[in-house]
Image 1 (cartoon, rainbow, N blue to C red):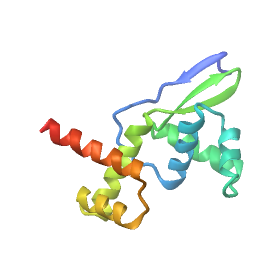
Image 2 (image 1 turned 180 degrees about the vertical axis):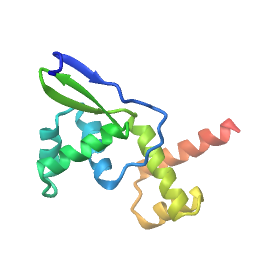
Image 3 (image 1 turned 90 degrees about the vertical axis):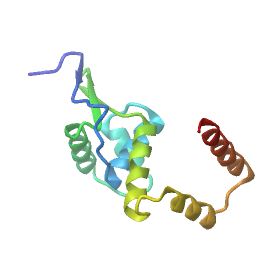
Length: 139
């Protein structure tokens, strides 16, 4: 049966704590940057940095739909995908996973490694100081 001119798959749960794989995170990043898109657009973006077949991108996005990481809207038989969760929620989930696995839950160790191993601009340091001050004022 054909989809109506506008149909939305509502396999959504914004509370799901699914950690995306590297390929899924790459797709999510494209969708966060460019907004809702079809598979062709996402595949073309991925192919700017590495070669991936259309069917591989399609399959990954279908799996992400099943995992409730993406939602799909069908407009005139074109499937448009968008992330279920906001970018900040995905970033927080991925970061929490990294902290737990690589730093045994020690966020301070992560911050020390980041600041010690990369060039940090004065603007970035000012933002970090401001964040620390606001966190201290909350306590």
